[in-house]
Image (cartoon, rainbow, N blue to C red; front, side, top):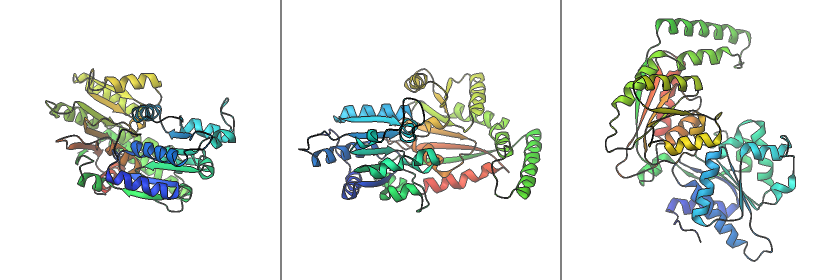
Amino acid sequence: MMKATLRGYQQEALDAFLATGKGTLKIHPGGGKTIIGCAAIEALTIRRMGWPSPFLTLVVVPTKELEDQWEKVFDEQGITNYAIVTYAMAARKQTGMGGRYEHDATWFASFDLIIFDEAHHLAEGVQWRQLLIPAFVAPYALGLTSTPPLDPENPMLRVLPVLYERTFADGLEEGYAAPVEVRPIAVQLTEEERKKYAELTEEIRVHMLRRPGNFQNPVFTKRKMVAAMAEQKFTKLADIVDNINVDGSPQRILVWSEFISALEQAHTVLTQRGIRAEYVHGKQANGFRKALFENWGRTFQVLLAAKVAEEGIDYPTVAHGIILAGAKTSRQNVQRIGRLLRPMPGKTAKLWVIFCERTMEEKIIPLIDLVTDE
């Protein structure tokens, strides 16, 4: 039997899944999706008791860090007979691409339940959508996410429709999510940066006249980089970190940017101020990233993070977040804010959003408000 006792809404979510056996649970970050997954495994195992073969579960996750977290929770809750793989590994298994991961339909067929953690990835790109095939075929399939696709016609929702929804507001009302105080910080481009931004904006205008609806031109990224690397952003970042009162409060500060080059520049500026910081991104080896997460708050205070830290980091003591440059989608903002929502007594999370005025980055503020007011 599991050691954890389900909260009321977790039981409701579990019941909604067990009634159909296939679908998605939309639960806000910090809402205990992993525990719900464990409860689903236990309930279905009991339902299948007496069968000649054991009940087998496959868990699909986006990152190695989440793989480790699921394994830890399974061990704590006494869950057995499972396998955990990343989306990339599962996709290779399904499509037959990638050496030893040749296509093997019997491999997926050997599992009774497939759990897709951060299931919104099933709506992103042809490669991940291929995993909807084993989800459709499996006896049971469970999607867990705080950000399912909005389009009801999305293939993911046809296979794994949303069965239960739990919002930020629900979690805040019942004390299962920490309140988030958003602090927008506007900075200016320098004269040289402003000139370059204007030149690239004109290039984009001409491009869109010639090829309406085509957003693949590198000029879009170049313009975004001008704002992402704005000089004043890094000065303001260092000022904020300097002024955060950490005496008697959580010691970890999380800083995000879409661009590794921005993280590297932030590291340089913070180091010049005497602030210990490290940056983490998906191109680093898994073992190196794991060591960084373990040392965060011990040997250094500020973690500069790319996408690898948007999903699954579970540190209730993280109460300060800073976004450099705008996330491209509201989903990314949900994931980032979700890192701050883990509740602990007396905690009010603070999120600084540093953006460049009179640029496309101004759009991030309404997105943040939309997420936190949900």
